[in-house]
Amino acid sequence: MGSMPARPLAVPDAVRFFARSQEGLVSARQCRRAGLTGQQVHRLVASGRWSRVLRGVYDTGEPGDLDLDAYDRRRRRSAVLGPLAYPGSVATGVAALVLHDVQGSPQAVTPEVTFPDGTPRRGAGPVVVRRMPLRRHASPMGVPCAVVEDALVQAVPTVGRLHAVALMDSARQRRAIGRATFGRAADRAGRRPGGLARAGWWSSSDARAESPAETWARLTCADAGCGPDLLQLPVDDATGREVARVDLAWLLPDGGALLTEVDGEAVHGTLAALHRDRERQNRIVGRRTIVQRFTGGEAWDGTMAGRVREVLTAERWHPQAPAPGFRLRLQP
Image (tube, rainbow, N blue to C red; front, side, top):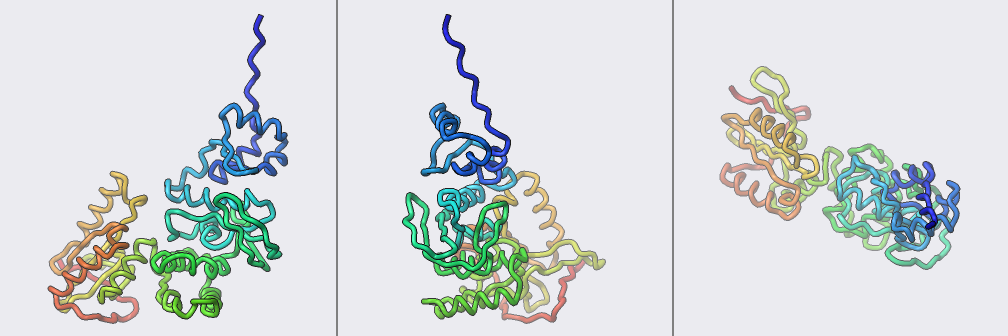
């Protein structure tokens, strides 16, 4: 008689918990804490159920955070890889901001860490190990990372202007950093090499931007000489009832307005969302409003700025500074 096949190894619930909060990844240390021996981990890899990502880091195949889109899951996976590969380390820079749920980073995030005492270590594989002493750190979702103030100062020199300002805007809009702390971060960044050249990035940040695409739209339109007159403009119908809040708006000399919406694919890509967007757009179309819709890609590459400029030139627009609390009322 043949021998009975070995029963599949049961993965402890604690390991599954770690994996689901870390985009499917677990460290050898976490496995040991949950009661898995090195031999059992080897069996899981040899059987094909798990795969080895780096020394001491394994992909369990667990689904991770299903509330995130594919791009954000990829970013988070890169961000958690560093601290898992280097026990005792802390994620820094863009990776730390991703762990704080700050939006606006590039699609590809470099795993990077430092050891709080600043001791030098040699990096391996894709993980960058920086020599950067830290007096403090946070642990959102249980993963150690630099606090938002420090992470912004670290991250801004490593990305371009559009990503840098989007990260600033998101951190402020989500209240991950306060006004005074943001100002302190800007001052610190200005004293770093190249900081003066990037000072304008910090001063152009605006906490009202509700998505990276809105940040890109604001910046590229400003670069084209047609920065918006208003952000997050409330639009009321003829009875005074608010029917929409528009991302970016320009007030026209005839009393009308150019109203623009910038769509992120993850938010507006479903059929139901498209129907909601269409109904919303229909509500703000009027005799004296021009309504245009753009994608995040068009905001990024200047396509939106070019089209907006064409409309504004035809309408003989000039910059305006409406009074605080201004609301647009649609004409019947």
